Image 1 (tube, rainbow, N blue to C red):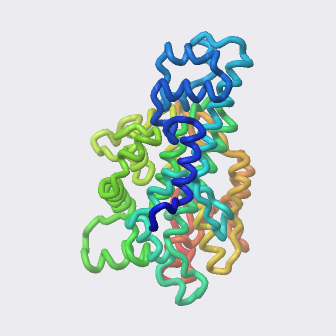
Image 2: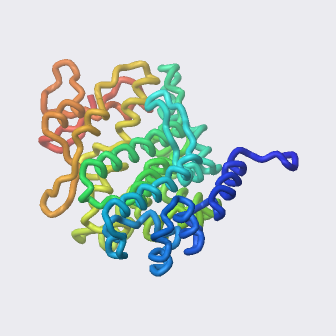
Image 3: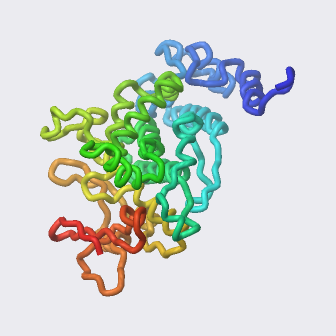
Length: 382
Ligand SMILES: [Zn+2]
């Protein structure tokens, strides 16, 4: 790059620095930079209060109206004015979001932290892994790859957790929770081998008979590798994540509980407490299998195969809410919605059978359906 030519991002940072007289990233502000920003926004009367409480940039996203009241900011109008002014800071950081146009979900905004995961060789590798194995030999349109599916799952994970947050603020979903759920969605299939399920279903058993290889565990290993070799720990901390607990949370969402010694305890997860059990049902739902991974591949695989998808995740998003069932918080939806969106009616199939559409078997042979019977908890092939 020639000297003197600024990339757009550098230029934006430069303008911001000049405008604010402080670091472009508010998360790095000390007390002096924080009060400078208040002054610039015409809120100098609260400058001293921020100074006395030693408020710095990293703490700003966590400031609530109650905090400001405790600090002695009266009246209510002033507290709201401060919060509104602080919110502009996150909008500034939104400027570095990237937008992808996806054939299934339309325009997808990627948070800068998520972009750091996508822009790694380990994630880009997914561009070359066929989502449906060799199915494209029979369905020529189905030559899509794990990359776009992973981006789609990250996007939907964000949609679901945000919808719950907006509908039920009492769940106390934090920005860190949202980012961790989105990262888990993005990275859940990192461990897939060439031709996806054909690799673990046919290749591994042939070359390594008896080996218990699962792509979920491989995803966790690849995730650890990706974070380490790309120096992402520091980037995650800069975006407000707490390590190592948030790394554990992300991996648990992909592969389930990591610590076998506490598998039988009432709460086998370590990344989040039981009060947030519902967060573990977004990317890979071990309870009922209804998760955003399926939402994406139902829609995406059908689109590329050229067959109809009856699953409407938009409707599910509208009705999903967290309810407490036997002491644990689960993602639930109204009975009839559940019935309408999950059951794919197929000719004269018995009503109580839920068909989790041919995701597994179509990868090897076309025409099989994986059928899950609710009553007997058995799986049938038809
Ligand atoms: Zn997946």
